[in-house]
Amino acid sequence: MRSIALARTSSLTGRETQPLALSSPSVVGRVMGAPLAITGLGAPLGCPKSLPRTVPASPFSPCRAAPAPSTTVHNGSCWSPRGLRAMSKVENAQRYVGAPQPAPVKKDGPFFVMFWRSAVGKKWIMAVTGIMLIGFVFAHMLGNLKIFLSPSALDHYAEWLRTIGYPILPKTGVLWLMRLGLLSAVVLHIWAAASLTRMNRAARPTGYKSPREYVAADFAARTMRWTGIILTLFIIFHLLDLTFGKTSDTFVKGDVYNNIVNSFQRVPVAIAYIVANIAIAIHLYHGAWSMFQSLGINSPRFNPWRRGFAIGVASIIAIGNISIPLLVVTGVVK
Image (cartoon, rainbow, N blue to C red; front, side):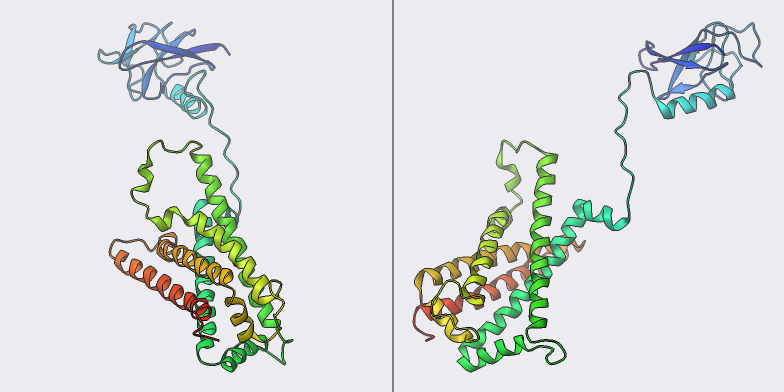
């Protein structure tokens, strides 16, 4: 078996590019749609020895001489089905000598794993956990608004939360399951957000020189990272303040009404709760707006409805939650 060299001939300039060395009795064909110059071998079987110096480039008439666009033939070689099959393998393996090799493709894993790793999957995680957290914040607000009915109404509501499922389940068993579920949702939400941020930075290490990315993004979208950090710090403080009673000497376990009033009568604490709930409203507004897009519900027909829903959810939760520390610190609720 003799080694032959194939050179790609440009159909635009007629110049030969870097030759491609192959080992085959007769290898002819095309590379990247351009004819090939074949050197180093005599005429293949089935082709007459007395051929003109040019033959047609069409692979369907390998041994028929004709003018027209053609390849240069050296030593009598010509197009042949056998050569086309061999050249097909060459095209699939390497276009020309020195061509950059494609990066190795990672082997696909199970669908759930690939979905988990993808940007779309992370956006779905953020959307689903966001729905869970919005539902919790809304229900938590409705329960806390019982403070305006009477102290006993709020305390009875808190006791009901502690005894859900009792005596089938231990006291506070369901409550702690709910807390663990919410904690998992918060952790997954933060993880997905951080992962998407890393993916975006890896895709574009340097930012835009001009602020053109802000044109289509409103204030809530641009501040999602910072409102998210504020919410994380607020959750930690809220648990230490009204769940574990670590921030006040007057905390009494089970006395929810007095614990809330005593906490919000401290002006710095009341201000902190008000600021945190403003951040919650901003975060929820953009979250309620974008979660539909993450779930694939993204049509101009629905945009007015989506915006109205986002504004309504954020406004109701903000007004309800801010009213409690505001009315306590001003002395309306005692």
